[in-house]
Amino acid sequence: MKRYIALLLFVALLSVKPTLSAQFDRYQWDTISTKNLPSGRHENGFVAYKGKFYLIGGRGIHPVNVYDPNTNAWETKKKTPFEMHHFQAVVHDSIIYIVGGMTGRYPKEKPLTHIWCYYPENDLWKKGAEIPKERRRGSAGATVYNDKIFLVGGIKLGHTSGTTNLFDCYDLKTKTWKTLTDAPHIRDHFSAVVAKNKLYCVGGRNTSVHNPTKFSAFFGATVPQVDYYDFEKQTWYTMEHDLAIPSAAGAIVLLHEQLVYFGGESNQKLAHNQTQSLDLLTGRWAVHHNMITGRHGTNAVVHNGAIYTAAGSGTRGGGKLTSLEIFSIR
Image 1 (cartoon, rainbow, N blue to C red):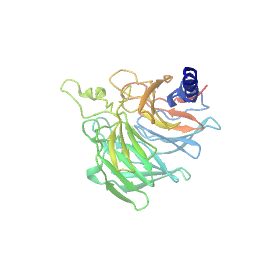
Image 2 (cartoon, helix red, strand yellow; image 1 turned 45 degrees about the vertical axis):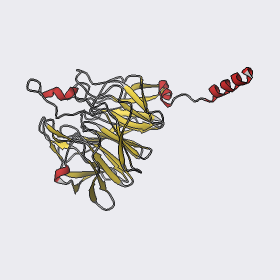
Image 3 (cartoon, one colour; image 1 turned 90 degrees about the horizontal axis):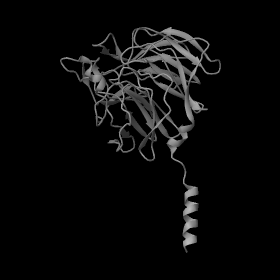
């Protein structure tokens, strides 16, 4: 009997799969030496469209830069119509949408009044639908799900006041806005991501936090809690385990059924370079290889099983990186 039980245990051990996060132990970051460089910027969008990567917006007025992984070169397109920054760009059909962003200079940047649309096929900008006045904010998380843009969190007045937990959706078919249930935690300077019919809010901070002697106290007011919205149940939840190393303005993607979050900003001088993954089956975080250059204020794309990120700032506050990094299996 003992031998039989031991055999069963041995077979069971053989059938146990390694945790999903262990997949990333084989991944490492490398800097890609591209044939040319994009316009340096931060607080910009970075999205993929038809196999190419679009670096768009950011503080100042910049051209749209397009990276082709097949040629390893950047191409320069039209500039934004005006300064637009602090947004998470999203793609639907043949349009890149800018929603939930800001314009103007620190610290009283104003939220965008309209959605802005960029047409990659025509290198064309157009003003989209107006955002309801009472729902306008910047540095919000934005995602697309079932032909709708979902906008969560953000701050109403630049880096001064109005960090929110607002939640809205814009129906791209009916061209209408709908107010949804507020998220559990207020946060800004973060990105949202959809995985398995759920919208996740990871990272961010409360930029409304100030004190009389240190206006920039908000750098340390990071939000460690991870909130998610279940589209089927139409309900918000907060995960049991917090983000292992909290930061704001980090990048996030979905890869191998896990959320991969990296970079970001806090009260330390340099931008974060840590890479963290959330196993959606266990709800636990793991930490992996560091980035070559820590950065915040940009995002990332997944292409052929690898993660790419570009631009952003390498230090707390402003900066203009031009480098492109890849997180892949060596």
